[in-house]
Amino acid sequence: QVQLVESGGGLVQAGGSLRLSCVASGSFYSINSMAWHRQAPGKQRELVASITSGGTTNYADSVKSRFAISRDNAENTVLLRMDSLRPEDTAVYYCYALVRGRDQRLRVYWGLGTQVTVSS
Image (cartoon, rainbow, N blue to C red; front, side, top):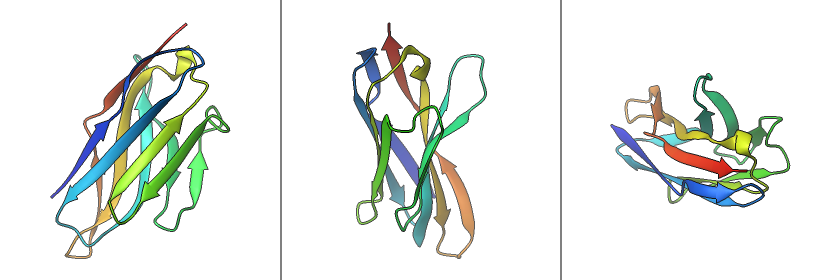
């Protein structure tokens, strides 16, 4: 079993910055991709940014040039640096990991989410 624990959410004014962190723990063989998704009230969950074990990144158009995703494979951690935050970035942010278990099977895991609120 794998646990993903997020931290770093909070309340910030428009134009401000926040950094989210997610740590994976448990018993597994390796972590393939990690990502951040978000879900605003009344909207579907959407991909914000993803990163492969090799460091290839992908961003939603709405956050390109403002957000940066990174990971530390040795620490099983993924970070999301969010700059120039806008009120429309307000959402619950969820950590995602595609994990290869010791049985070599791939499984998806989600964190419980962390609230990000951007005031205008």
